[in-house]
Image (tube, rainbow, N blue to C red; front, side, top):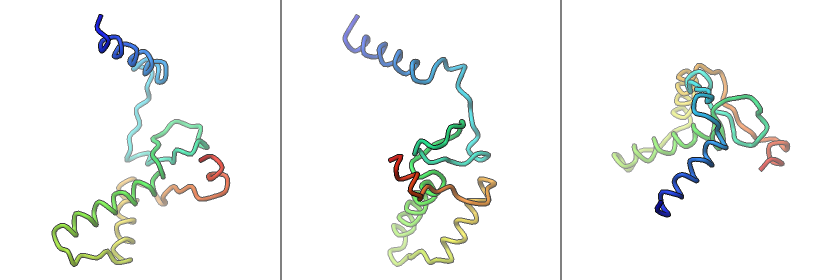
Length: 110
């Protein structure tokens, strides 16, 4: 057995130890659940990203702005544009608000 093959097998064992058997994984639909922040407070199953819904929105907003500026260097996002994009974002996820961890308890989990 080569060193690379052994490392791959050891990696597979480590992954299975962390996530269990593939059949035990619960699949979530992102448009039905949105994103939770990864600060450790949420104990239920879900989809987790740094910053949760708000973090994903900010990343998407930055990418959108960069793409628009690459086509038109004078492009500038206005507050009304951002408001409309937030409304569209929330509608696409069937939510009424963005999750955002900004309190002292959230900070203590970082």
